[in-house]
Length: 207
Image (tube, rainbow, N blue to C red):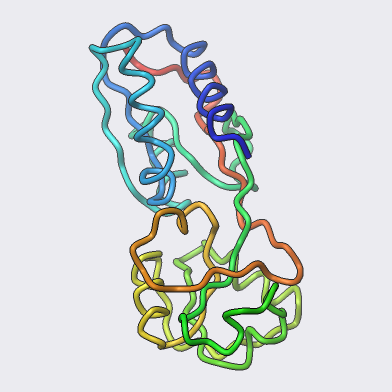
């Protein structure tokens, strides 16, 4: 995935929507996009629209959908499938990766076997209706030994670093991380979510 191309695609779409010269853009997003995409996108916007202000709300997919419906945000980043009344634009796919402690016996393996996910404590990234990883386990008839569940990517990474278990996380959040962990591809590549620009059909950003 070329992030430069995705930035340009996003900027073109938003520019087409409103032609803003000044005002407030409200964005609903989750932590990995806020950390690894938005700073560069906003910096590029500021070159052309120096008078625009930004409000960024962090949440999970369900919360972001609610914010879009209520027009609490002008647009948001979500995953497929989402609500039919949203206008969406595909941006990127985010592969799911296995994260292991550095001392893990499979730290040097080329790929991580699916069956091995059930052989040790598992740390689950999940909240409410956001059950991407649980769906993967169910579809592959796997029953992991889940010891901890949270919606905080960084809490998961810290616990993996401490040797409390293994986990599956999206590749986007695993960029420039401060944790001493090992990142491995699964033997069967899995796409965790499609990152989208979403807004209510017919809605435009307010000037």
